[in-house]
Every structure is written in structure tokens, then in C-alpha cells.
Amino acid sequence: MKILSIETSCDDTGVTIFEAKGGARNASFCILAHVVSTQDIHAEYGGVFPSMAKREHIRNLPVLTELMLKKAKLSGTAKAGLRHEGRRKKSPVDAIIVTQGPGLEPCLWSGIVFAQELAKKWSDGEKKVPVIPVNHMEGHAVSVFARPKGKFNITLPKSKFPMLALLVSGGHTELVLWEDIGKFKILGRTLDDAAGEAYDKVARMLGLTYPGGPKISKLAEEARKDLKGKPKKLGLRIALPRPMLHSKNLEFSFSGLKTAVLYAIRDMGKLTEQKKKKVALEFESAVAEVLVHKLAKAEEKYSPKAIILAGGVAANKFLRMEIKKFFKGKTILLPDKTLTGDNALMTGVAGYLEYLKDKKKSISAGGISAKGNLSL
Ligand code: KG4
Ligand code: ZN
Image 1: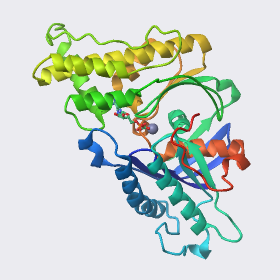
Image 2 (image 1 turned 90 degrees about the vertical axis):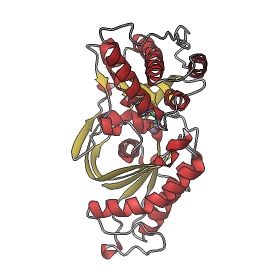
Image 3 (image 1 turned 180 degrees about the vertical axis):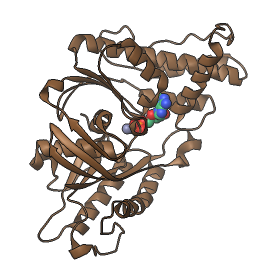
């Protein structure tokens, strides 16, 4: 079946059209058109403004969908007000998948309303185009199996489960036991800031623009290079805490770490490039140490068949490296570098698997409501 997938949970407008075949345990996908438009209007504000992001999604969605339909060589229009004049008025796709949550509610609504309007426009007396709501975090978890181009297969026999997923993004930090298709158990999550959020806030303290993760990561990498063989070169001593490292549970907390960075910066006088590098290095090390430590604790307890690292922060080179180093010999699954951030391919794949699992349940009979705090 041909599917249009829409992702608008935060500041990325994602539109993907793909063809999917097969059962949930052995599905094959062929990407027909795929785009992510990242909103750069938030850069100078240090974070995402929901109302501005929503406005951008509303502006982007029809334009991007129109472009993707053309790229996929499908007839039909996504433009508001225009009647669907496709070949014999047939819908260009068999279903629409849309992110229901978690995320920023105004943004989620923009995707949901757009998906529902399209479904109405593309349905006729004979055939109704279903709208399938999907959980954004499930999308991140399955992103490790997706490929950004062409065709790929996903085989998920029962024997591949359970998997242990560390999902780290701007809004979430969760340790999840993935017990089977569509079956997740949250083992621990952050009590305050998400890891990506802490990255963004520390970046702001250092005068860097949003999103801060990639910029801090770059500075930290430079610091590591500077330090190679010259351990005293960066001089300055900064001792940052490792919040909840020794707590018995699998919860996280990053707000104290962020405050410790704030105090360290306050006490160091003029912020030079060298000092920024040192802060970035120490902060990145502290975050990675806590994440790896908790992941190891969960791994020991649940003996998963594979370890997944996904979400925006999974782009972090140092974290990827530390996890590979620590869990040497185990199966580590990481998303393709172009699929760590939000995109409609990962949510489309998750939505298709959910749809196969329970067709009736996954198709919304009435309307879909945005759920900012939707849990796995
Ligand atoms: O999953 P995502 O694209 O959006 C949400 O669902 O929140 O994650 C975005 C987050 C931002 O906080 C961003 O700073 C962080 O991922 N991020 C990174 C890196 N690239 C993006 N954090 C650390 N290192 C990176 N290289
Ligand atoms: Zn995300």
C-alpha cells in the first residue's frame, strides 16, 4: 500500500511517501519521496517557540506534500481549496499516518488537522482514506531499522525481542524495554530536563544558537583534539556532577547538571573560546557517563537481544562511541545519521507496523486529538 506520513511534533516538518508491503514481522518498504524541513527561525531564541513552529508547519505542509506527490509521480493535490482532480479522482495514497504525540500540542495539531483534511479530500464514496495516529517515540525506536533512501526490509521475529532502547531527544530521555511490536515498557525517564534540552540550555549559556547539541558536540570534539597528548593544555578545572548516577532506579535528572554549568561559567570570568571548549567537553562527558551508566544497569537487569540508541541526541558522536566501547561484542543498533532527528519516515514505519498489528485499533474512527504527553 502507498502511504503518506506526516511529522510535526516539534520544529521539523517531515513529509514522506512510501510503499509498504508484507506483515509486521517481515515488512518491506520503498521510499518514493522524503523530505524534512528544519525551521531555522528558532535559532536565535535558544529554543522552539510553539506558536511560531505551528505557523511554519501550516505554511510548509501543503507545499512539501505537493512537492513530494510530484516527486513520487502520484496524481492529486494537497492544496487547500482545490478539489482533488487526480486520475479518475483516485486517492494518491491508501492511508495517511500522522504523529499524535508526544510533542508540542499546537505543532501536533497542525499535522493532525492537515492529515484529516487531506483524507477527507482524497476519500470518495467507494474508498475512505484512513488516518493512522502514531507515537513519536515509537518512531524514534524503529528509526534504527529504516534506511533513508530506496528499499529496505525490516524483520522483527519474536526472537529479536526484548530490545533495550535509550531514547534521547529534546523533549525526552527514556529507557524503554521493547518487548514486542507495539509493546513497550518504560523503565526510567528524566525527572526534569531531557538530555537534548540540557544541551540546548547549556549552548545558550555559551552564546550558541539553537539547536545547541551539534554546536556543543563540535566544541567538545575540538577540546578533545587539543588535549590529545597534552593533558594540561586547557588548564581550567571544572568539576561537574553526574546526577543520579548512583540512584537505585533507572531515572535521570539533568537540571542540576545544567545549574552546575551555569555556576561554573559565572565563576570563570570572561568566556574565551578555550573556556567554552572546556565547558562543552566537561558537560558532554557528564551527560554521556550518566546515560551509559544507566543503560548498563538496565542491560544487566533485562539482558536484551539488542541495544538501541535513538532520538536527536543519538547524533552525538561521543555518545555513540562511548556506547559502542562500553557494550563491545553486544548488538548495538543506531539510526542512520540522517534519521536521528525528527522525520516522517520513522513515524511512517512505526505507524505501518502498528496498523498491521491491529488494523481496527490503529485507524481512528472519529477524530484524532493531539496528545502532548502521550506515553509509549
Ligand atoms: O528528536 P529530536 O530531533 O526532536 C525532539 O523530538 O525533541 O531531538 C532534538 C534534540 C535537540 O535538543 C538537539 O540539540 C539534540 O537533539 N541534538 C544533539 C545533537 N544533535 C541534535 N545533542 C547532542 N549532540 C548532537 N550531535
Ligand atoms: Zn523527536
